[in-house]
Image (cartoon, rainbow, N blue to C red; front, side, top):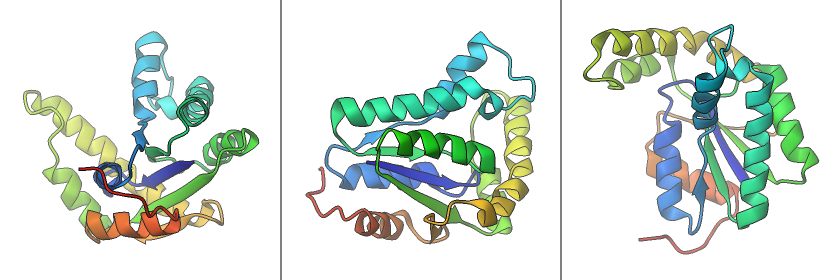
Length: 183
């Protein structure tokens, strides 16, 4: 099973996945951004966004499928994915492989997203790069908010302004996980 946690930058995807991992015995965390970082070292993404690389999309799906098939454990994926074509492509590959997919999208107001992005620190020793990341993240808010109407019909929308414990409880209930928490 794959649990894909989607939403804008600053919506709480990683925080939610960390909470899920602590409460879901044996769950693996897979961040497709790492695949993008590797590819960025090898090839250039002409648009500056590694999601535009067909190879990234293929590798993301193949690695997710491989993790499920090899380890037979739930895979938690915190990743913003809002381009309708890319969603269809990646989720289609997961479906073709017979992998159960639960897709959650964290809805958060623009004001709250901007506040969270301002509070995050990515590169404390590089203020220029820090500002560049903030600008890029804020620039992606509108496309993420606009994508809500284009996401698959089985997407579960969650109130991303709730706390991570409550959100994790909702996700676990939807995925019908009732096992022991890991301590």
